[in-house]
Image 1 (cartoon, rainbow, N blue to C red):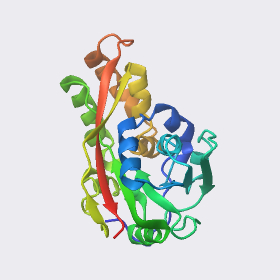
Image 2 (cartoon, one colour):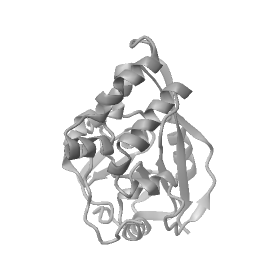
Image 3 (cartoon, rainbow, N blue to C red):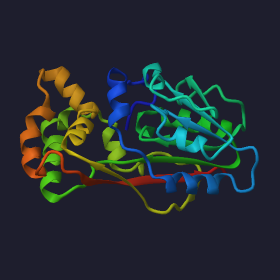
Length: 256
């Protein structure tokens, strides 16, 4: 488990623009379901998207709600957030949003809960959520394309950069099941992210992994470039697009 007193660990600001370009988007059905669960018959409606990054969750929520508060501890990440009339962005840590008490119906955390001081974050969630509101935290792990391609990616993930993943990565691999969850559990449907990428888009995505960046800083060697020939051989024509799929691992709770 991470140290609850640790300071904010920023693994992404150094390549925030690349991260914004290469990361896949979440399915629209996920946001439709969250809003329906969190805001039945409520008006006005609001959400807090914590650790928003470049707004991959905040922007779809803003298309469905009256107001979205998008916060991130890294100003460089917020600089990649496109403007939206219903998104109010601010630099703030997960544990101290600056939002008023009972001001939102929904709190979302996409691919970030494992970086938080979790107990302090839950206290903040309980403060800002309205009675009956939802917290939804989700993550995704390795994608699936084909057995041959997946084997090359696994060799990168666990082999070449395995020691460069921060310990918090193991929390994500367990889909947050080991973290405290002081809410009434809400069963969620299964969701899946999907993209169609060519070889270069896939290599660009692999280059955004925090472990890849740490490996390069530690060794001076780009591990993605090292596996690129094997990935190309498994891929086929470089301009051929393939379906890339990630299961969304979602944990949802309602404020008691």
